[in-house]
Image (cartoon, rainbow, N blue to C red; front, side, top):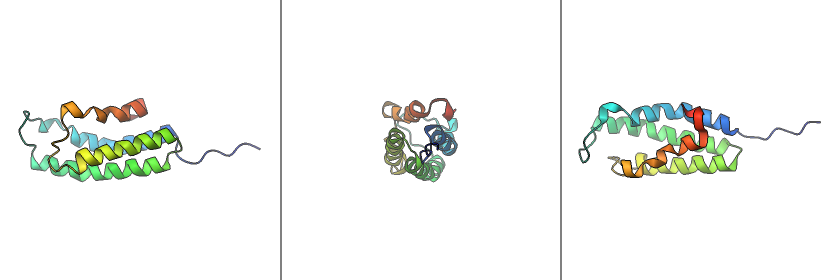
Amino acid sequence: MAAPRPRGLSTAAACRRVAAAGGPFFDVLFDEGTARPEGEPLPREYLDRVHRVAPRFVRTLRATAADARDTRVRRALNAYAAKVQRHVVDSPDLAGLTPENSGWLLDLGELCGDSLD
């Protein structure tokens, strides 16, 4: 008799789910039309769009973390969700998301690699 398959999402399946949910979030967050000189406020329409898609992305990250079978994946997705929550969702003007402190945005790429492309 074969051993039962482990329950939960594989790392690849979790990354595919996150990639699908992350597309709209990153498309809005990195909208080239919103580039501004440092110190200039971001347009209200842009902030509204970011704050519309970011909570959905956080919910998907948390749900996927809960469904993942690998502890490392669960921890990484929960940590990423917390950062998106703190730096994007809870920040009315995204002031905390600067080039100097936004390297964490690349953490999903380190976890999931090519599946995020």
